[in-house]
Length: 603
View (tube, rainbow, N blue to C red):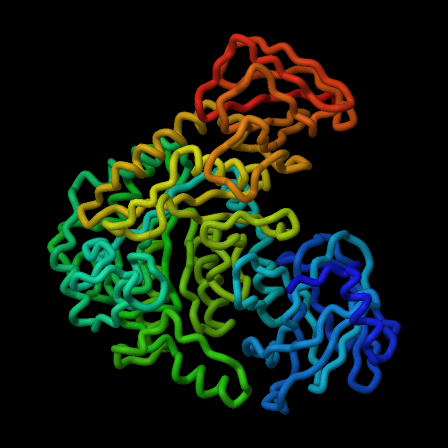
């Protein structure tokens, strides 16, 4: 349940609380960190008995989780407490979440919607010895809001704010639109095992999880590799599809959770060169084809989870320790049915770290490493992945899922666009599917139309993010035709209206009239916005009517000087008043997927 700090409900709870009044803090915390979190050490709090109080500033409003870090000594006891923000009760129930090197992290179950920037005061009561309190952005769909200890933050920040990283992030913001590719030996399974669809198994119902779904042994699963022999034209075909869709970069699953590498690796024989009959290196071939098309390149890598050679993901050790503290340990994504005999640390040292180094050496112009499946790695291990990438090539950016928020940007979650109050200081990305599955699932025919994919894209563009849109080729490397058709449909719109997409920033509001519930079809009165300098772009995804009325562009928003229809020489008539901008489309036809306008405002 979300708790807005000005809510009547919180006020009623406050009146009923017998907790002492807010204390006056000794120091004022001035700024938020680069990850939008606010760290409140106990050493600067005004404390009284089991109560701590701080004053701090919020510069990035949004939805936050309040975390409490307590000393490990005594942490096996139940953790109870309450919290008030600006005097109003915002937390009463604590849940132990995870362990970092500084101590045990507990979270209040209520999230806190901080609606505006400014100064705030927090009072916290705890029956355990508090190390610090932390306000952490909800992380969108993340259920495990992991944040690093202070000892790693400053070294990470120095790398994150270095000149090469800043330049790389500027490239990424401009790139805006990329292709995700989930492809591996699981593509041969096509979402079924011995006549059973993956829906009958356990865990996620996406095709790349087939080994997990049916607890397939490592030896039996390796049989899929014998038939994995893609067509030699796959690389050129996929690169050309990305280019035709208007994308600027491509990210492929160099190694997914099953541990199979799509490149020739010297530290494992569970790869394309040693386990299949394919004569070549799929990652390098696709890299070359993409560079030939002028596309940038990134790789996905599952670093914490590896069902082939990653043991049990360190589950048994972590669970044994967590059990002593009363912390839950999630088994999802861990190979508990047929783990490899080596330890998880040995897997990291002998496979994961070396393979990252191999990929960086193999691909000199690599732009992005998209880590996933961090699982139960420690913050020290997560930091090592980030640090080694930086040391080998500081021009490579890293996503959040490397662990403990060490990424250079954050992801909004699979197929999720953040709401306005979920936008944080870091740049965001949404990764999404063209149907329901990421990997190839032969019986998944739930293909999104080109218009629906465009709706996702312009919503992301209006909020300033990147869209990483997935394809799942079959075992031969062929992309299903409905997906290809939708991508080509997108490409026509994207190329015509690229001025409104690439190199633009957010405008307020992000949109108007957008139906958040029935979002499978666009309507003529729905508009999304972006901006560049004195120009506001108005994006519509519905066939135009004789006129369009855009309420957000009323005179108080700025005086309109010019209105252009992108991709057209047609001169549009328009008028503006205190109610909005009226655009006359008489005699102008823009097609079923709509249009974009460039509206120049008076400086």
